[in-house]
Length: 142
Image (cartoon, rainbow, N blue to C red; front, side, top):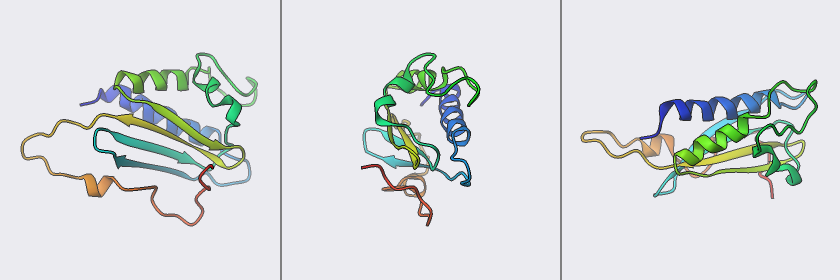
């Protein structure tokens, strides 16, 4: 089973960033879903925010790395570095797909929880092949 405090931090940071880096003049849209890939779960956090240019996809995971000036958005530049470390402590990976001006999807993997005797299988209720349906979904990056 995963460390609840680390998992909490992962979700708080990814969801917080999705809300913080929203596009001006557009209501924020946030989706969170999970897919069961057999040997691990892949959890996705998708937004319709400002997006991130491809040349910065690796840089944003560095310690104290910020893409914006201190007056534009609050924060220390630690959030995604700590998030990646928390995911790696679970034996997982953290990935990003993004389009500038259209939004981002952060996806991370975690191992499945060990089955406990008498536990119900909730996979169909929480899993799936993609995000929940919505008419105003940001397009998937190429």
